[in-house]
Length: 296
Image (cartoon, rainbow, N blue to C red; front, side, top):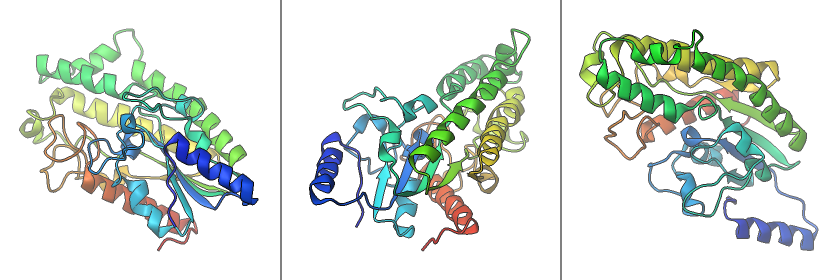
């Protein structure tokens, strides 16, 4: 049986039924996260909380049937930050997405968590760097902009994420002490070299001089911070960056896992596409197996 909690009414009805019958909540797999978990634009979309742009073909939905858990709750939501683990997220259209931690309980056995990008302003960075890249395609205007105060503003945001992520992991452990927690990193967006970057600039308008900055000083630093906080907390980190090298947004449609600013498939701009979700699911499965989880 697969139970998916998203709508308020469905959750309340199940909880009431359990109370009346004296049943305890079933063992569950719970997926928490932002748009890189939710899968905006990938069809079909879950209609229960339409403002979350949550796909029924995202990586949690792909791996859930393999985990032998009676209940599956995917409460990921596009735009989510660490604060939305404990606070409702205002989305449009209604209903709002309830605090994601509401899906956890003492019988939760597996948790995946993909969070952090929105805490550092992912959408704002992508928009700003794209606009600057159009104005100065061969310089490094994005790096200059975010270092104009004398310190790297994005690096400071990433550093500030670490204690927030630790607090999230503390609360997961408190609410679901039996759960194995898998913290999922972000896949490659930009190529490892800039040799042929001009070929993809029409659909990914980042200045050539900013490619290394956004790849190494932003995304790789973000992933390293998430990994360090997760491992230091005793949780499992899922590296999705390494297997996604060569599948970045500059690659042809049949190869890339992340769409550029102008998508060629059913995915949001600068977000994983269907192949990306399948690739991330494979990375999650492999890490789960390595950590002793039975994966079908």
